[in-house]
Length: 467
Ligand code: AMP
Ligand code: ZN
Image 1 (cartoon, rainbow, N blue to C red):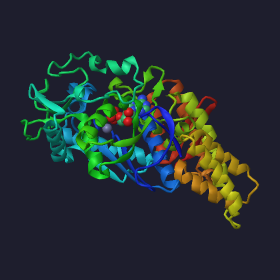
Image 2 (tube, rainbow, N blue to C red):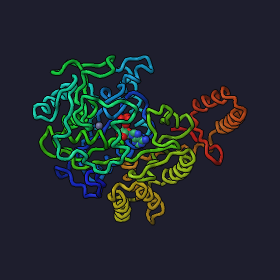
Image 3 (cartoon, protein in one colour):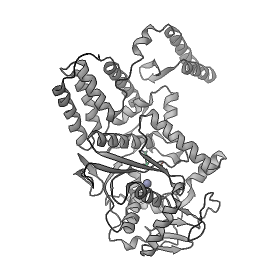
Image 4 (tube, protein in one colour):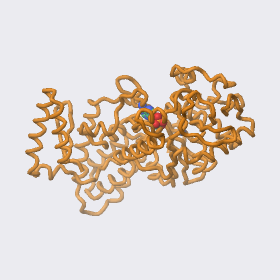
């Protein structure tokens, strides 16, 4: 398989450290708010990568952290702790917030057919490991104490900017977010490994350490959690492109300083989901979630289809108009795939040729949009339904688009409830036109109770029954 590697910035043959075995790591969510559909674009593409590696025959161990401590508002270790911000907003404790949004994250993942990683580890479970790694970095002379905090000394490295391709905005992260620079740092790029003195003295979660009562920096958690569950050699590390600097750059600095050898071979970065205002981000407050899409009648898997239609290394712009187009295409596609018969023997040669086409697309830097077109090739192929069904089943192990799931479309036509549904939808449209939101909402709830999903498209309203 050929993959683009941010380390080296070239497409490279994917060759794991141990033949046949892949140690994979994913930066997990910071659980102070719902994940937005931009975060979930990254997790969808990582899910496809993981499933494709398994499809290609690798034995994958995928590890994900949950950031429930240490991620400050600015990636440059300043500002308020994000978790504390969430707790204050909702008048709850940090751990209550962490539990609630971790559950919400995995509920969203399930709706998007994103598999749960083999290992999921909250940062607050690993305090001893963090303290151990920071102690070794101090012993080896890669870290120093200043103003009560422990810092990583980036001047000790021969190369710090390992990804090389950072633009000015990325490099300006230290002065972003209108927070002043930390005077304790010897070098501008140094970063905090352990805090005991933050400007935010009301930090809720603190632990004893050799350097005083405090809490870990954000970057150290991924290095430690990866080492704990994937050992000293990581094959592939994933995340959104905003994580490349400073987060992943710092992970590499401290992991390699600690281990004394190269750590992770391949770095997989997913480009951002943007909306009309630019990058979708939690800090902007007003962002799109899976629940919001559902409340508007969208099947979350249609959003997955939307993401698969574009390459992970290209920015993707979200608009309801383009999502609506995807919904139409997706519904049509599923009607055709689910209607395939089951009889007959699989024609293995024909199946293999179609599977080879899929492999060819995905082997070329995970070209999912080309991979999706193979579904159409399968439908058009000169092969019996059993063969098509078999191939689509294989493809769906990676794409996870519910291609073969029974459709409600056929029974829908004969359902005596349909007329009532149509009437309710007409009433809802009328109520919305009159800005009578209370009535519109009441009808929406009634339709939801009848398991009806209403989709607003630019050509009007369409609806179907939820599974
Ligand atoms: P966070 O919960 O903020 O730590 O982010 C979780 C993941 O989502 C990280 O891998 C981020 O790089 C990624 N991410 C953040 N914003 C976006 C976006 N607009 N589009 C795609 N991925 C994003
Ligand atoms: Zn991370």
